[in-house]
Image 1 (tube, one colour):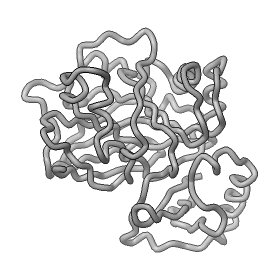
Image 2 (cartoon, helix red, strand yellow):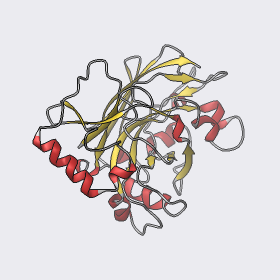
Image 3 (cartoon, one colour):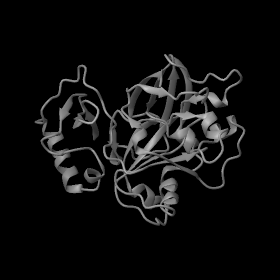
Image 4 (cartoon, one colour):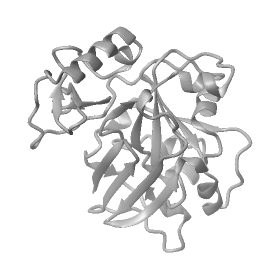
Length: 285
């Protein structure tokens, strides 16, 4: 299923995109697309049955804002340098263990919402990423297979990053990852049953119509199941938590000087197989 949230900021309602591409209202069945939904198989089954019946009310998509595909996110966990190509382009060795950082849930916005370039920023960068949404509480998982079994769905994410804040201002990466609007997420959440193998997905990103990233999740150093298993050793993952699993080669930081960091007026579009497409215009904060 393709589940999404539509409407004004703070007043989104749950919806479903059916097999014919018709947007349908789920607000009569569920209150939100969130961890509580993903953790409840009986409710998910009711949603599937209703989707198959074709009786869900149709929503007029014209002019309707698409919000973040997941509501009430507890935490966003980032994985750094998780593609061989990206590590190589920035001159880094492939890490021996996953690099883990956190993004505040309040950085999450809709897939087509405006992204704000922070004041004093000179190195705002793009990162197309596969997002993993946890569907069952995960603690101390024993294997990558268990990791995959705890995935409720997948989403498209742009892990926007300010490189100077991240790498040149001391401390951890968090300064460059947690600026306002820095986590566009969606347009929809695809339930895990529709993505049998998350390691075969094309990941693409364009800036002002020019293709910048053209990768595949097969290049990940640590695949999705292992990432979930690994993170569960250090923190409890709850339904609705999101893990952003790294970006392929092609970011601005990996390109020759003068590096084409983002400026006000730039438009970024992101796409992953089966997970839809995003479009953000960047403006000054």
